[in-house]
Image (cartoon, rainbow, N blue to C red):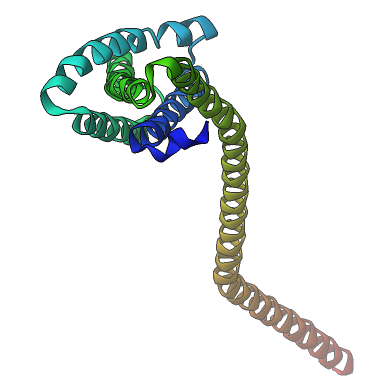
Length: 232
């Protein structure tokens, strides 16, 4: 029954769940690649490194119940989304060789934020439909998670390949630019050396010419002396 989507408690909460789980699956996928490719973890070590996700989800779900009763669903879900966005933004500080402690805290904070979103949002979806339609609401909760996961599995690997291709092209362009600059620098050095080499060459040529002239003069004088002696 699509009329349920006219109720913001149902539609907005379902959309929020989709965003949250899309982010979770995407972060888990990217973090697995980071742990194995950049950190050198094995597949088992990369999976064990994500154990803090379980503790964060449990603590987030339990604490969201008390927070919702005190502050309301909207504020708790908003806080969870803000924290989720902040944790995803922290990924820009990842670098190869970083210790595990900040990575483990990141997993815990991410799942804690997800618990603040999933718990109240699920309660909102279930409370937006009549009791006899609770099965529809429960199925909607499952569909939002599955669709978000499917979209993530479809979109993120393609985006990852696109980013890798762009990075390869950028590296090739940088290498080509560096090679061009190196060739240009070598040509400039050769041009700078050519005048000096030309001057030395000209100086040698002049010296050789002078020696040749002197030798020719000596030969000429010897020949004149021989002629004078003959006539004498």
